[in-house]
Image (cartoon, rainbow, N blue to C red; front, side, top):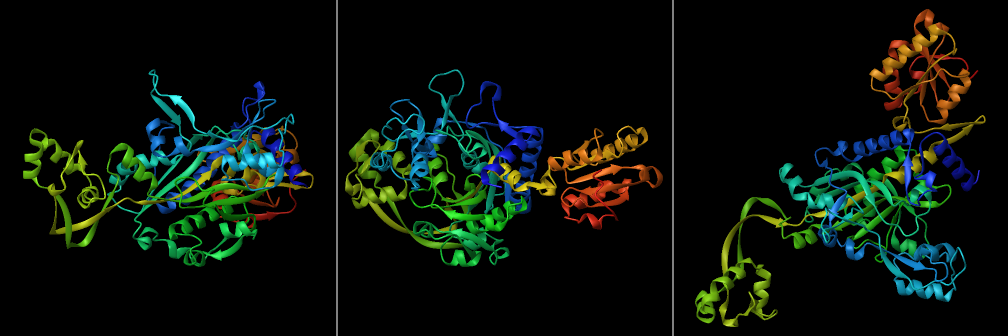
Length: 588
């Protein structure tokens, strides 16, 4: 089966059985938007719950989850750098007026990696190769930068501009100090968030792979930059594990990804921090748990010109899909102190962390002071204002004025050099203040839903089976009476249905059509286990339990169904461990 064939079958099944489909279909659709149907919504929520387990619950001593608004004031995104830097290159057809993302157009037509090239470089490539509009063949104009933020207005007043968040990170950075207080000021501290974001993509394609509105699962992990060991207390658990990595230098020379142990990658500087490596391992395990085999996944380092404006190092987690080959499903960035520093500057608030020493230290410090007598004689009634302003200036700025590296201007007045005095004094310090650094793992939920769906698609004996990992199946069990019109069987089947629902499972009851047809319907929507009520049930109180993937069956007591289902779904129990094997598959 070709990649195109598999993609077509996956999308047909997703639409027909209520998983996902393009939004606004009755109006012809709008590119970059997708709906999740009844089963898709459940599948997506199961994947989100699993992410919470991997990232938040399994690290509950260090990681907490919050929720922040979708819309933020302009000032937040000016501080974050998005207003200035969150752009993609756009090119317009001079004949038909259609607009295209320039780097994607170059990559598709010429096979050249154009990510991170300047608009001028892309314009030159388009001219040299005479690239034309892919729709009408018209001439293309100059490449320009297009900001991807969705602007909005907050309240009724013009000028009170805001933006729909393009990522979750800024809400967590702005809330950092408040969350730190609730966690008693302890680092490391992970702040996680799951939510909708908007990016005004130029020409979104690739279905679920590139959307204008989508869900992100993200975590900002705040650490002490001078304490790598203490920042990653769980590193030793993973240092012998392997990751498939393609460093940027290997990408430049055309080398494929290769296996590194975590320890090897960190010690060689391929991954710049232990915490980056740790969360990459967790991301690998998470995708494997969704059905992606290790050989179909690797981590690709982005080059200096490809990274976001806030990042010191970024790895994309790449997964292979049928139609588009390698696609990014998650990113891991070392954001340093960029974000907190910017928000300190723009808000005027102190976002530093104080870390006490085990024992106070006595140190000699240089301090710059202004001679009050000279200031008073020179500036008279304005002296008080100058001294007050000077007290607010950082020590480094005062020292630069005293040494002549900066103009000695305070409160708009030029201060004579002789007014500055540098003194040394001994002080006792009990700790240090610093701006935490941040490691960020960020996962594209909608892409991951598609990936899990495609990897689950199977065909067997002319049937379609959605072989999702059992713990993310949207419907966890089916209950069917063997014969549609037998009221006694139907009554016992409805009884078992109620028992399973009360036990907290998502269950479907199906009594329509032949038993084989019902099994096929349930296999097609990924139901891991089906319980069948037959005539033996009426005699001894046992039911059959059927495995979606192997079609094997066992008999178990009806009242044990909730426990058997839990073991089957969440403890990876083989069906044969749960009861007495039954010959055949019961398909007819």
